Image 1 (tube, rainbow, N blue to C red):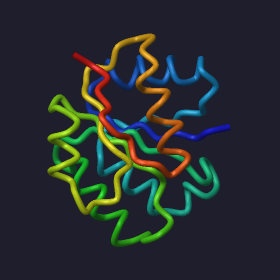
Image 2 (cartoon, rainbow, N blue to C red):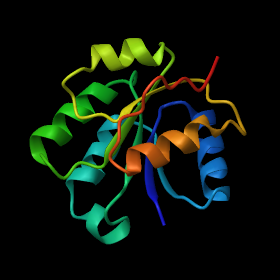
Image 3 (tube, rainbow, N blue to C red):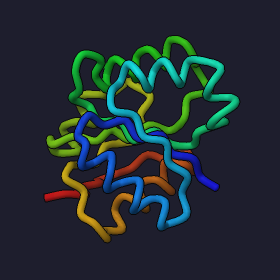
Image 4 (spheres, rainbow, N blue to C red):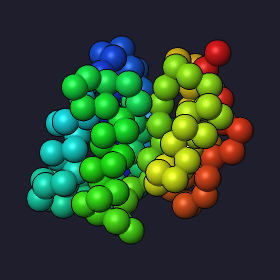
Amino acid sequence: MTRIILVDDEPLVRQALPIMLRAAGYEVLPFADGGTALEFLQGEQVRMQFPNPDVVLLDLHMAPVGGLDVIQALAARRPGILPHIIVLSGFHPAAVATWLTGYPIAGALRKPLRAGSPVLFEAIETARRGAKILGSGGGR
């Protein structure tokens, strides 16, 4: 079963996405902020409670610890063994991917994500295989 960590400060996203993902057969662990998720991902808890997460769905704009902070900390601490990171943002995915060139991300999706849209599931499966998400949209 594919394990997904969802990090988003929007309560509606943390409620709706896990329902959609679990219905599709994914195991999901949501976090409300980058700091809590980072603490979990860097600690022993991840090995015991949620071993080997496959994908991280990561909101880019959060406070006080944003998505870029999480990406940088994971890359510095766990080089080569990162889960596949899909960035979620209200900005166009191509702009986000360009801005994050050189960072270890699989790609970006634009929020809001439409319920029932296959874009999210296709992105997860693409990232899980270790491939880049090209031309992905998702929202508007």
